[in-house]
Amino acid sequence: MTHRLLGHTRGFAMLGLAASALLLAGCSAGGTGSNAPHDAGDGGAVNPTAAPSKPAAIDISKLDACEILPQADAEKLIGSKLTDPLTASNSDVASCTYPGDPNGPTAQVEIYIGDGAKQQLDIDKDKLKHDFTQPTGLGDEAWQEYDMLWARTGTTWVSIRLVSLSDGATFEQPLRDAMSGVLGRLA
Image 1 (tube, rainbow, N blue to C red):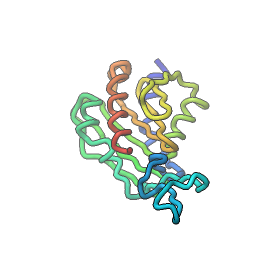
Image 2 (cartoon, helix red, strand yellow; image 1 turned 120 degrees about the vertical axis):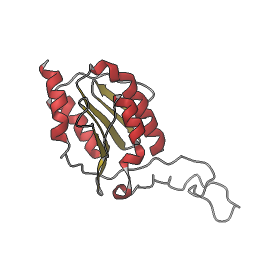
Image 3 (spheres, rainbow, N blue to C red; image 1 turned 30 degrees about the vertical axis):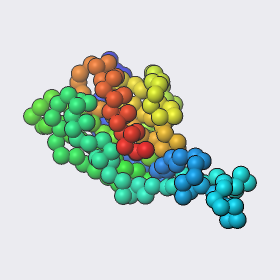
């Protein structure tokens, strides 16, 4: 019971959590697109000795996390009406928080994109010693506990967290579905 109560109250404390890294997008490797290295004298053949191109950095300060997890998807995830979002974005983190209706059930959905999401995972794993499952099919790596899901694609970490008084087990698949949509929008 203590773990469950801590899980629901820690989200409010984490609203002020600052992140500290750039969000990087994955690039497709190889191919003959404009990013592929070419040898100037061979009519466009790929030069096997050229250095591979690096993923292009996304200007996270211009990323709208509420577009990455739209309100309709957040409401579907939590199963209740949410109010206008609160957003934060700087060069290190993009986040969006959808608070619940003050007259409705306890409900809140949050998304963090950037190293802040990884920092949340590290705290829950290393300091709080929470129990996790590792769902498959979500990015390059994924970790889930009853009220939160993290996924990494390339070097980019994303977390989706919810606050509800309902049984956390009811949100296991809806969290995975929401994360799948988020990762698709980041690609």
